Length: 341
Image (cartoon, rainbow, N blue to C red):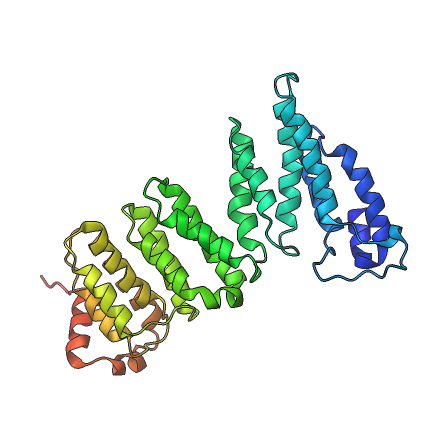
């Protein structure tokens, strides 16, 4: 039925409403496949509930498109009843997980056509307190995948940046949460690129704070994110930025020194197949750390290997951007020595 109605799209709003009435009683179905299918149906039902959609008052109510707010209110009311009866009902927590599974699947399939909702995220945070691994896994997946693909408007972009700044600057926060934040920001910024353009200075501070984190995994993920944003010219690279990274790479502090090396490698990897004017200097600064201790040495080796892979096909053109001394340094590091017996 879902496939048949999909062919008619917005032309059969009355049938979508009737399908919703059939799905509501089955939300707490014991079979997971059934719950996921119901969630998929509900996501399709509210697909045309757009923020700026105008419905003529003269149109009969039965032809109005189903509203996500009404459906979420029904789901939340069902969940509130289940939570309030935990002490009385033996299977309440399990039933709530089943209902929330439908809720999660609905939200995850519906992120492309509505704005992010702080109320829904609050519900998910509340559910994470339960000692059920399946439910926690479902919530983590929704927070990581669903939220990052949600459309962000200029009205709520400040809320997103404020939350990211708070998490990035927290010294007591678990490092995996910071890695999840970086993965979320990667998708969220690319999905809402023009909304975030006005907030580039604030985002740069967030990424730099995470790049200087004490945890290795956080620094590496931050460098990966920065490289992607440099590649799409979301952040601009100039001499002052290169100098900042070089000053970090000369620090005695291990994490800060590694952050500088990672930042320089992010600049190098942000320009595959091209050699902009700033790249030779960044590459030479990176080569200075080829003999450093780990993890700096491994970062330099990986960046140089990637540079060689992406530039070797047109090296006869790219090498004209380097001086003779720079080419000699690159040759020493990129070309393996030949041994004769």
